[in-house]
Length: 216
Image (cartoon, rainbow, N blue to C red; front, side):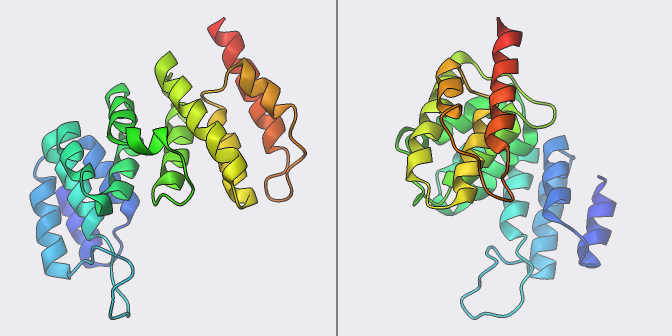
């Protein structure tokens, strides 16, 4: 997306997060400066939940992270991820980039969360979704053995901690791209999921079996 298109959409209040991430992924020249100008001009909020209430356009953080990646690549995201309130946005940018380098950064930058899984962590759901996106959905990456093992341990620890069907279903979906033979055994023990997750365990079982056949 060209800078002029971003500018027009922003001023017409038609700019979406997806547009910002896509431009960041392409590392459009001048994107960082343009997004910062627009954020200032249009009063974009860094949070969708301002203390005073009311309507806001919560694009400031997306602009910050996408602009940083466009300008400085993965290294710039590493600096931003050190701040807790940036982590949600950094994970989304890494998932959008979807490269081997981005996957390495995801496991490095969030090693602490992956090592001590808890649904109480503010980015647990983001990481589950990112693992599903990177290693199964669309044009996927193939995880290294170490990445797959780390992801499996993270997901399998989370599953019994899940408090909702959605959390359990998200874990099962993410296992599709990193599962091994122990995952197959686990999936065969699960009872059928209720709507809207029906057959998710069967779909995951087929996906993991297919993944192992390909690798063998």
